[in-house]
Image (cartoon, rainbow, N blue to C red; front, side, top):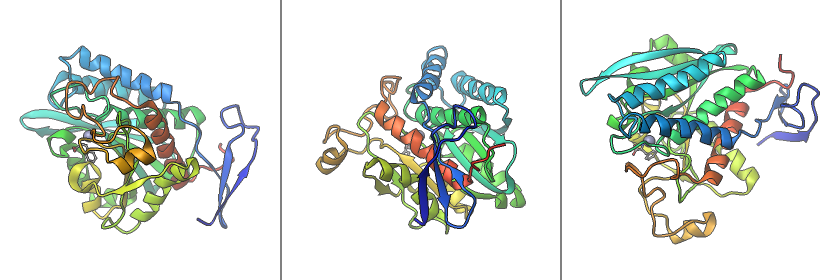
Length: 320
Ligand code: DPN
Ligand code: ZN
Protein backbone atom coordinates (compact mmCIF):
# COMPACT_ATOMS: atom_id res chain seq x y z
CA UNK A 1 0.00 0.00 0.00
CA UNK A 2 3.05 2.26 -0.07
CA UNK A 3 2.67 3.22 3.57
CA UNK A 4 4.97 2.72 6.50
CA UNK A 5 3.69 2.21 10.02
CA UNK A 6 5.70 3.39 12.99
CA UNK A 7 4.90 3.43 16.66
CA UNK A 8 5.28 6.71 18.41
CA UNK A 9 4.20 8.31 21.64
CA UNK A 10 3.05 11.87 21.34
CA UNK A 11 3.04 14.36 24.18
CA UNK A 12 -0.11 16.04 22.98
CA UNK A 13 -2.62 14.78 25.49
CA UNK A 14 -3.71 11.43 26.79
CA UNK A 15 -6.14 10.82 23.97
CA UNK A 16 -3.33 10.90 21.44
CA UNK A 17 -0.73 9.10 23.49
CA UNK A 18 0.67 5.92 22.09
CA UNK A 19 -1.10 6.13 18.75
CA UNK A 20 0.28 4.66 15.59
CA UNK A 21 1.25 7.09 12.88
CA UNK A 22 0.59 6.17 9.28
CA UNK A 23 3.01 7.83 6.91
CA UNK A 24 1.98 7.91 3.28
CA UNK A 25 4.98 7.92 0.95
CA UNK A 26 6.23 11.46 0.30
CA UNK A 27 3.61 13.20 2.42
CA UNK A 28 3.40 14.65 5.90
CA UNK A 29 2.74 12.07 8.63
CA UNK A 30 -0.89 11.59 9.51
CA UNK A 31 -2.44 10.02 12.57
CA UNK A 32 -4.09 6.64 12.56
CA UNK A 33 -7.57 6.56 14.05
CA UNK A 34 -8.17 6.03 17.76
CA UNK A 35 -10.07 3.06 19.15
CA UNK A 36 -13.71 4.20 19.10
CA UNK A 37 -15.63 3.34 22.28
CA UNK A 38 -18.16 0.64 21.43
CA UNK A 39 -19.76 1.22 24.84
CA UNK A 40 -20.53 4.78 23.74
CA UNK A 41 -21.94 3.50 20.46
CA UNK A 42 -24.19 1.14 22.42
CA UNK A 43 -25.25 4.00 24.68
CA UNK A 44 -26.41 5.94 21.61
CA UNK A 45 -28.32 2.87 20.43
CA UNK A 46 -29.93 2.64 23.88
CA UNK A 47 -31.11 6.23 23.47
CA UNK A 48 -32.65 5.35 20.12
CA UNK A 49 -34.36 2.34 21.74
CA UNK A 50 -35.78 4.60 24.46
CA UNK A 51 -36.98 7.04 21.80
CA UNK A 52 -38.79 4.19 20.02
CA UNK A 53 -40.28 2.95 23.31
CA UNK A 54 -41.64 6.42 24.02
CA UNK A 55 -43.07 6.85 20.52
CA UNK A 56 -45.13 3.80 19.70
CA UNK A 57 -42.28 1.35 19.18
CA UNK A 58 -40.64 2.72 16.05
CA UNK A 59 -38.59 5.57 14.59
CA UNK A 60 -40.15 5.51 11.14
CA UNK A 61 -40.56 8.30 8.60
CA UNK A 62 -43.60 10.40 9.39
CA UNK A 63 -43.78 9.16 12.97
CA UNK A 64 -42.74 11.10 16.09
CA UNK A 65 -39.95 8.63 16.85
CA UNK A 66 -38.10 9.73 13.73
CA UNK A 67 -38.24 13.40 14.64
CA UNK A 68 -37.11 12.57 18.19
CA UNK A 69 -34.16 10.63 16.74
CA UNK A 70 -33.15 13.63 14.63
CA UNK A 71 -33.43 15.95 17.64
CA UNK A 72 -31.27 13.65 19.77
CA UNK A 73 -28.45 13.35 17.21
CA UNK A 74 -28.56 17.03 16.29
CA UNK A 75 -28.38 18.08 19.95
CA UNK A 76 -25.29 15.97 20.51
CA UNK A 77 -23.58 17.35 17.41
CA UNK A 78 -24.41 20.97 18.16
CA UNK A 79 -22.96 20.61 21.65
CA UNK A 80 -19.80 19.15 20.11
CA UNK A 81 -19.19 22.12 17.81
CA UNK A 82 -20.68 20.89 14.54
CA UNK A 83 -22.51 23.14 12.13
CA UNK A 84 -25.78 21.31 11.57
CA UNK A 85 -28.80 21.81 9.37
CA UNK A 86 -31.94 19.94 8.48
CA UNK A 87 -32.90 19.29 4.88
CA UNK A 88 -36.67 18.99 4.73
CA UNK A 89 -38.60 16.93 2.19
CA UNK A 90 -42.01 15.36 1.78
CA UNK A 91 -42.57 11.68 1.16
CA UNK A 92 -45.74 9.65 1.27
CA UNK A 93 -47.63 12.71 2.46
CA UNK A 94 -45.39 13.24 5.50
CA UNK A 95 -42.54 15.63 6.25
CA UNK A 96 -39.09 14.13 6.59
CA UNK A 97 -35.62 15.44 7.27
CA UNK A 98 -31.98 14.71 6.60
CA UNK A 99 -29.54 15.92 9.25
CA UNK A 100 -26.32 17.32 7.77
CA UNK A 101 -23.38 18.07 10.05
CA UNK A 102 -20.17 19.81 9.02
CA UNK A 103 -16.99 19.74 11.10
CA UNK A 104 -15.52 23.22 10.67
CA UNK A 105 -12.24 23.36 8.76
CA UNK A 106 -10.41 21.38 6.14
CA UNK A 107 -10.47 21.83 2.39
CA UNK A 108 -14.05 22.70 1.54
CA UNK A 109 -13.42 21.80 -2.09
CA UNK A 110 -12.43 18.26 -1.10
CA UNK A 111 -15.17 16.91 1.13
CA UNK A 112 -15.29 13.39 2.54
CA UNK A 113 -18.89 12.66 3.45
CA UNK A 114 -20.12 9.74 5.56
CA UNK A 115 -23.77 8.83 6.03
CA UNK A 116 -26.22 6.46 7.68
CA UNK A 117 -29.99 6.31 7.55
CA UNK A 118 -31.66 7.21 10.82
CA UNK A 119 -35.20 5.99 10.09
CA UNK A 120 -36.56 2.57 11.03
CA UNK A 121 -39.38 0.64 9.43
CA UNK A 122 -42.84 0.91 11.02
CA UNK A 123 -42.56 -2.61 12.42
CA UNK A 124 -39.92 -1.93 15.04
CA UNK A 125 -37.28 0.29 16.65
CA UNK A 126 -34.56 -0.40 14.05
CA UNK A 127 -31.65 -0.68 16.45
CA UNK A 128 -29.45 -2.67 14.09
CA UNK A 129 -31.15 -1.30 10.92
CA UNK A 130 -29.94 1.34 11.24
CA UNK A 131 -29.40 2.45 14.82
CA UNK A 132 -26.03 0.74 14.46
CA UNK A 133 -24.72 2.86 11.60
CA UNK A 134 -26.35 5.99 13.01
CA UNK A 135 -24.82 5.48 16.47
CA UNK A 136 -21.42 4.53 15.05
CA UNK A 137 -21.23 7.69 12.96
CA UNK A 138 -22.42 9.79 15.89
CA UNK A 139 -19.69 8.43 18.16
CA UNK A 140 -17.06 8.96 15.46
CA UNK A 141 -18.22 12.55 14.97
CA UNK A 142 -18.07 13.12 18.73
CA UNK A 143 -14.59 11.58 18.85
CA UNK A 144 -13.42 13.98 16.13
CA UNK A 145 -14.65 16.80 18.34
CA UNK A 146 -13.21 15.45 21.63
CA UNK A 147 -9.79 14.95 20.01
CA UNK A 148 -10.13 18.27 18.19
CA UNK A 149 -8.66 16.77 15.04
CA UNK A 150 -8.39 18.90 11.94
CA UNK A 151 -8.06 16.74 8.86
CA UNK A 152 -6.78 18.09 5.57
CA UNK A 153 -10.11 17.32 3.91
CA UNK A 154 -13.41 18.74 5.10
CA UNK A 155 -15.55 16.21 6.99
CA UNK A 156 -19.32 16.07 6.54
CA UNK A 157 -21.74 13.63 8.13
CA UNK A 158 -25.32 12.85 7.09
CA UNK A 159 -28.18 11.06 8.85
CA UNK A 160 -30.79 10.24 6.21
CA UNK A 161 -34.55 10.20 6.45
CA UNK A 162 -36.97 7.86 4.70
CA UNK A 163 -34.37 5.35 3.49
CA UNK A 164 -36.88 2.62 4.18
CA UNK A 165 -39.35 4.24 1.78
CA UNK A 166 -36.85 3.94 -1.08
CA UNK A 167 -33.71 5.96 -0.30
CA UNK A 168 -35.83 9.10 -0.31
CA UNK A 169 -33.82 11.42 1.94
CA UNK A 170 -30.36 10.76 0.49
CA UNK A 171 -31.71 11.00 -3.06
CA UNK A 172 -33.40 14.31 -2.22
CA UNK A 173 -30.17 15.65 -0.73
CA UNK A 174 -27.97 14.73 -3.68
CA UNK A 175 -30.48 15.81 -6.32
CA UNK A 176 -31.08 19.18 -4.68
CA UNK A 177 -27.45 20.11 -4.15
CA UNK A 178 -26.24 22.82 -6.51
CA UNK A 179 -23.94 21.35 -9.13
CA UNK A 180 -20.98 23.24 -7.68
CA UNK A 181 -21.72 21.95 -4.17
CA UNK A 182 -22.08 18.37 -5.43
CA UNK A 183 -18.70 18.65 -7.16
CA UNK A 184 -17.02 19.38 -3.83
CA UNK A 185 -17.97 15.96 -2.42
CA UNK A 186 -15.10 13.76 -3.52
CA UNK A 187 -16.13 10.62 -1.68
CA UNK A 188 -19.13 9.15 0.16
CA UNK A 189 -19.02 6.34 2.75
CA UNK A 190 -22.27 4.56 3.70
CA UNK A 191 -22.99 2.63 6.89
CA UNK A 192 -26.22 0.65 7.03
CA UNK A 193 -26.38 -2.29 9.51
CA UNK A 194 -23.07 -2.67 11.36
CA UNK A 195 -24.04 -4.93 14.26
CA UNK A 196 -26.04 -7.83 12.85
CA UNK A 197 -26.45 -10.57 15.47
CA UNK A 198 -25.10 -13.36 13.22
CA UNK A 199 -22.61 -11.12 11.50
CA UNK A 200 -20.80 -11.15 8.21
CA UNK A 201 -18.04 -8.72 7.37
CA UNK A 202 -18.98 -7.15 4.05
CA UNK A 203 -17.26 -4.30 2.23
CA UNK A 204 -19.07 -2.62 -0.65
CA UNK A 205 -17.52 -3.76 -3.93
CA UNK A 206 -16.06 -0.86 -5.91
CA UNK A 207 -16.61 -2.74 -9.18
CA UNK A 208 -19.08 -0.81 -11.29
CA UNK A 209 -18.92 2.19 -8.96
CA UNK A 210 -17.49 5.58 -9.98
CA UNK A 211 -13.74 5.91 -10.49
CA UNK A 212 -12.06 6.42 -7.13
CA UNK A 213 -14.31 3.98 -5.29
CA UNK A 214 -11.51 1.41 -5.06
CA UNK A 215 -9.53 3.75 -2.80
CA UNK A 216 -12.53 3.88 -0.46
CA UNK A 217 -12.95 0.10 -0.57
CA UNK A 218 -9.31 -0.41 0.38
CA UNK A 219 -9.51 2.15 3.19
CA UNK A 220 -12.52 0.29 4.63
CA UNK A 221 -10.72 -3.05 4.35
CA UNK A 222 -7.56 -1.89 6.12
CA UNK A 223 -8.69 -2.41 9.72
CA UNK A 224 -9.89 -5.95 8.99
CA UNK A 225 -6.60 -6.79 7.31
CA UNK A 226 -4.80 -5.55 10.42
CA UNK A 227 -7.11 -7.63 12.65
CA UNK A 228 -6.80 -10.71 10.46
CA UNK A 229 -10.58 -10.82 10.02
CA UNK A 230 -11.52 -11.85 6.47
CA UNK A 231 -14.00 -9.71 4.56
CA UNK A 232 -16.17 -10.34 1.52
CA UNK A 233 -17.01 -7.86 -1.17
CA UNK A 234 -20.71 -7.26 -1.73
CA UNK A 235 -22.63 -5.44 -4.44
CA UNK A 236 -25.22 -3.51 -2.51
CA UNK A 237 -26.57 -1.90 -5.68
CA UNK A 238 -29.59 0.27 -5.03
CA UNK A 239 -30.28 -1.05 -1.54
CA UNK A 240 -28.82 1.81 0.47
CA UNK A 241 -28.04 5.51 0.49
CA UNK A 242 -24.78 5.49 -1.47
CA UNK A 243 -26.85 4.93 -4.63
CA UNK A 244 -27.69 8.56 -5.35
CA UNK A 245 -24.07 9.58 -4.76
CA UNK A 246 -22.87 6.91 -7.18
CA UNK A 247 -25.37 8.07 -9.80
CA UNK A 248 -23.92 11.56 -9.43
CA UNK A 249 -20.47 10.16 -10.20
CA UNK A 250 -19.16 10.45 -6.63
CA UNK A 251 -16.86 7.61 -5.45
CA UNK A 252 -18.67 5.48 -2.86
CA UNK A 253 -17.90 2.76 -0.35
CA UNK A 254 -19.45 1.18 2.70
CA UNK A 255 -19.62 -1.57 5.29
CA UNK A 256 -22.39 -4.03 6.16
CA UNK A 257 -22.85 -7.01 8.50
CA UNK A 258 -25.75 -8.57 6.59
CA UNK A 259 -29.55 -8.57 6.62
CA UNK A 260 -32.06 -11.24 5.58
CA UNK A 261 -29.66 -13.45 3.62
CA UNK A 262 -28.72 -16.81 5.20
CA UNK A 263 -25.15 -17.35 6.43
CA UNK A 264 -23.50 -20.22 4.59
CA UNK A 265 -21.42 -22.98 6.18
CA UNK A 266 -18.27 -21.48 4.66
CA UNK A 267 -19.12 -18.08 6.14
CA UNK A 268 -19.81 -19.56 9.59
CA UNK A 269 -16.47 -21.35 9.35
CA UNK A 270 -14.50 -18.17 8.82
CA UNK A 271 -16.61 -15.70 10.84
CA UNK A 272 -18.23 -17.83 13.50
CA UNK A 273 -21.95 -17.62 14.17
CA UNK A 274 -24.64 -19.92 12.84
CA UNK A 275 -24.93 -21.27 9.32
CA UNK A 276 -28.42 -21.69 7.91
CA UNK A 277 -29.62 -18.63 9.85
CA UNK A 278 -30.00 -15.08 8.51
CA UNK A 279 -27.29 -12.54 9.30
CA UNK A 280 -30.10 -10.58 10.98
CA UNK A 281 -33.22 -12.62 11.57
CA UNK A 282 -34.89 -9.57 13.14
CA UNK A 283 -34.35 -7.53 9.97
CA UNK A 284 -37.37 -5.21 9.57
CA UNK A 285 -39.13 -6.85 12.51
CA UNK A 286 -40.22 -5.75 15.97
CA UNK A 287 -37.36 -7.75 17.50
CA UNK A 288 -34.71 -5.40 16.03
CA UNK A 289 -34.07 -4.08 19.53
CA UNK A 290 -31.03 -3.29 21.68
CA UNK A 291 -30.46 -7.02 22.17
CA UNK A 292 -30.30 -7.57 18.39
CA UNK A 293 -26.66 -6.49 18.19
CA UNK A 294 -23.40 -8.42 18.02
CA UNK A 295 -21.07 -6.19 20.01
CA UNK A 296 -17.86 -7.72 18.63
CA UNK A 297 -18.97 -7.01 15.08
CA UNK A 298 -20.13 -3.52 16.00
CA UNK A 299 -16.80 -2.80 17.70
CA UNK A 300 -14.77 -3.97 14.70
CA UNK A 301 -16.99 -2.11 12.28
CA UNK A 302 -16.90 1.24 14.07
CA UNK A 303 -13.12 1.05 14.34
CA UNK A 304 -12.91 0.20 10.63
CA UNK A 305 -15.08 3.22 9.81
CA UNK A 306 -12.89 5.51 11.90
CA UNK A 307 -9.74 4.06 10.37
CA UNK A 308 -11.06 4.84 6.89
CA UNK A 309 -12.22 8.35 7.75
CA UNK A 310 -8.91 9.20 9.42
CA UNK A 311 -6.74 7.78 6.64
CA UNK A 312 -8.80 9.18 3.77
CA UNK A 313 -9.11 12.66 5.27
CA UNK A 314 -5.52 12.99 6.47
CA UNK A 315 -5.36 13.89 10.14
CA UNK A 316 -2.02 15.64 10.75
CA UNK A 317 0.17 14.42 13.62
CA UNK A 318 0.60 17.97 14.81
CA UNK A 319 -3.05 18.62 15.60
CA UNK A 320 -3.66 22.29 16.28
N1 DPN B 1 -31.34 -0.72 4.26
C1 DPN B 1 -31.70 -2.10 4.19
C2 DPN B 1 -32.42 -2.39 2.93
O1 DPN B 1 -32.51 -1.51 2.11
O2 DPN B 1 -32.96 -3.46 2.76
C3 DPN B 1 -30.59 -3.03 4.51
C4 DPN B 1 -29.49 -3.23 3.57
C5 DPN B 1 -28.34 -2.48 3.62
C6 DPN B 1 -29.56 -4.25 2.66
C7 DPN B 1 -27.29 -2.71 2.78
C8 DPN B 1 -28.54 -4.50 1.80
C9 DPN B 1 -27.39 -3.73 1.88
ZN1 ZN C 1 -31.00 -0.04 6.52
